[in-house]
Amino acid sequence: MQTITPKQAEEKLQNGALLLDVRTPAEFNAFHINGNVKLLPHTEIQRVVELIPNKTTVIVTTCRSGMRAAYATEVLTELGYQNVFNLEGGLINFNKYLLSSNKSSLEEYIERAKILEKHPGEY
Image (cartoon, rainbow, N blue to C red):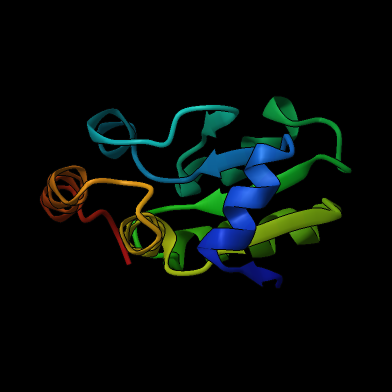
């Protein structure tokens, strides 16, 4: 399984990679990263072939903390997807990266952290 840092994920997303968010719809609706994003809860990951038929698509998987995304990354790899990367530490780590790199205000970070705490999902 290929794991990437938030900085590497940001670069991939800026270059057109697809962000596959494997949290629940409620978690996604509460907070998500905008852009080239598809929601597919990890419990439905087998449906990925319907949503992303091209197995050479560059995909970054994410969830709250990285655990569900790691599972999704393994499944995608087993299904033959060639360019799948798990965002290390999930959205929690991504938010920390944004804050530490001055790409997000403290207020935005705190608000995101509150949302992530309210919707912790599964580990």
